[in-house]
Image 1 (cartoon, rainbow, N blue to C red):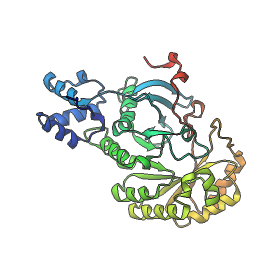
Image 2 (image 1 turned 135 degrees about the vertical axis):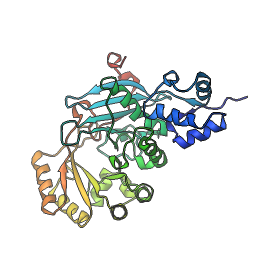
Image 3 (image 1 turned 135 degrees about the horizontal axis):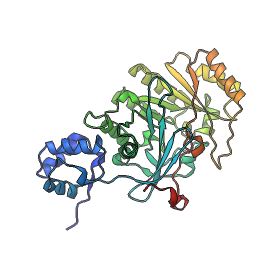
Image 4 (image 1 turned 30 degrees about the horizontal axis):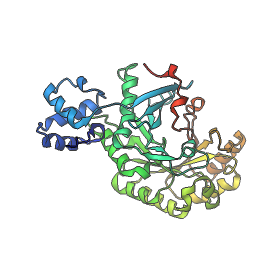
Length: 363
């Protein structure tokens, strides 16, 4: 008789856990206890769960896996940013970034940049992730696991540590793994779990138009960021290949629908490089965003080996910003975080096992 494949309990909503418990002769309240230990207390092993008897734990262990992602390496930037290299159960690897904004403003924030795919199929010209190609989507448990395992690790240093914000801006295109991402958001939002508010979650997309519209319907509290990078189809076709499938007119209409239905502004990200940092492009962006509830985030393109794309001068970046301001477009220049450890925007990629220095693996 073929054994049943175990379920990843870190990928289940509480009511789903309850259904599985009932089907296997366990009381419904066991699901409440299990969900709490996994998602609020970040338990990683069955023997950590103290209020469930051994017999029921054994039953749960026959049904579910409870296993953390394996931390292969942690790098820390001089600005406090930390980059985690996680190995998944099948040997694939992903990177996750913790950005510490403590004391930077009046709201202390611990933001985790989460990956949703191994690699990325979109292939933006300035992004390291796409250069490695696409391997597969992450499961729900692998997405939530990034938050749970970062939390667990940091609580060894500070028992009060808590992730306050999530940005789905790591490896992969979140909207090409939409169902798993939305379910992970629900799990992490739960009052019995991490309790991360929906309005503290932002999903960044390269422009998957149908899913922008679906997000507006499914979860209007979640923030939307769009990797725009150009205000004309000619330039965007080169930088963001998905533009050939969903050109600017379709993308901007979807963003207007999202903004109208949710009453939330859309953040438009511009990775400034020698191709798109011109005065003409800035003026085109002013026209493109006129009348929209929008904010532009200027990101000086980060060094990516093999891309051949260069960062523009500070003067060009400043001039671009001034042009937007003159056109009454809200704009800011994103603070660089983790540049010295390749943890900044566009720099994440899965690393080969041979690249990992055993001396820096956590004990």
